[in-house]
Image (cartoon, rainbow, N blue to C red; front, side, top):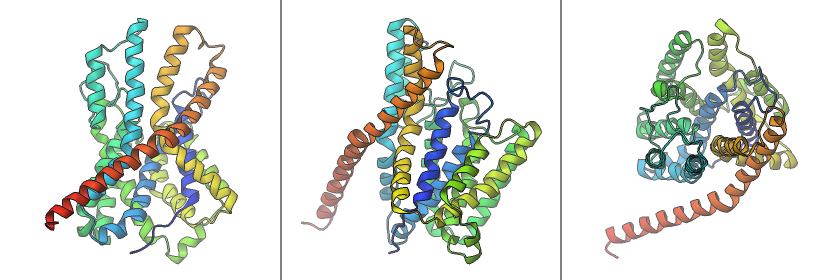
Length: 364
């Protein structure tokens, strides 16, 4: 079985993209008006990284008999604990807001939304115009589509020849073109009214990531090799491009169709020294928790700050920096003391049940 490789630069790029998303969602607090105008493209970059990483981690296992149930169990175990924590933080603030007299959801609505979040189910019929499909933790929308495309991938894995993968990518990119032309860009799918457009967002980049993993050793691609700082600078420059009107559509398509694949290949070729590898590993480890936890924590901290008078136009920069520090610390703590132990326990439970089932089937 082919061994899974570790690509530290890709971990670092994931961390850079996640931090940009965190800053984008409260850009006013940080005095970043006009910046991160294309920060939403971080999600498309995540989707492409996901395809590359999934192919790296699971293609060998799938080829050697790992089934759909085993694959999806591993993916759910990876994503689920932190996802539930994010929804719980969002629900806690909604309930606290009711007691503080600033709530907009009643107890039953909060319970319903938390129940849906527990099964990664969107809320598509909100009474609030422009509402997120996952109001307790809006970034969950992209995780829904990551799990969905993971399921599609494992279901068609044995059918998926290179030619068929290219055909799927071509259809996915054509759908992106249509979306970009109709929407003035590809920023869509994160709110309930247009939720299913997420399938358009995820299909091409995910399968492009899978294909990039398969062709990463192709000799001419070695020209794309670059140091991590150069890759990070390019990604930061892309995400910070402001709204450019009619040019948003071609810009988005060029980024997803050409620049992001080049960055992924470049990141996969980079060989980092030990100290840099350790730093990039930390960035990668923090990328998922800060992505999942930052939004409900912003809402919680911001709501409490307004009630207590701590968040004002004069204090928002200091409040934003303090909130960012709290989010980073909470994300690291949640990784060490919650996510890893819970996943280890759940994995142990799953393995014991699988062992019992095997023992039963063999009559022992």
